[in-house]
Image 1 (tube, rainbow, N blue to C red):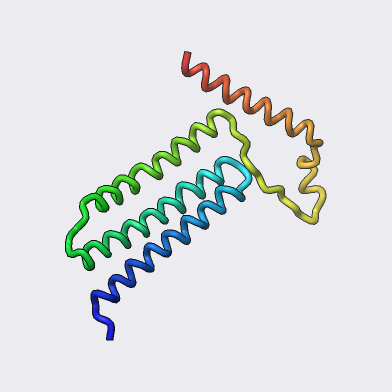
Image 2 (cartoon, rainbow, N blue to C red):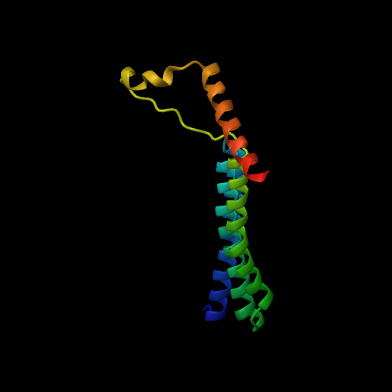
Length: 145
């Protein structure tokens, strides 16, 4: 019969394993997504969850298997929980302000009249994107100097 201590150690091991699985899914998302914003989202959200699951599992293990509270693990939990979302937000904001490419899914409908404006040729769409980027950069640089 398993004791409570062994059950809690198993729970800690499951949390560490779940953290590894979430980290793997995050890595796949970083590779597969199409633009920088989706990649940052995958890296920030899923990796934060992966590290949290892993550290909570380690914290639980130290409490029940070793018999003491790991202050380093607690500090790591707090530090990761605060800095990772802020870092992801700042990187996303910098990418947006510099005019990074943003993936937009094409709308497909059966009614051709609804999509009359969407039938611009690719060259015109590219020119519009370039003009928007130039306006954003001009706005940013006007603030700096």
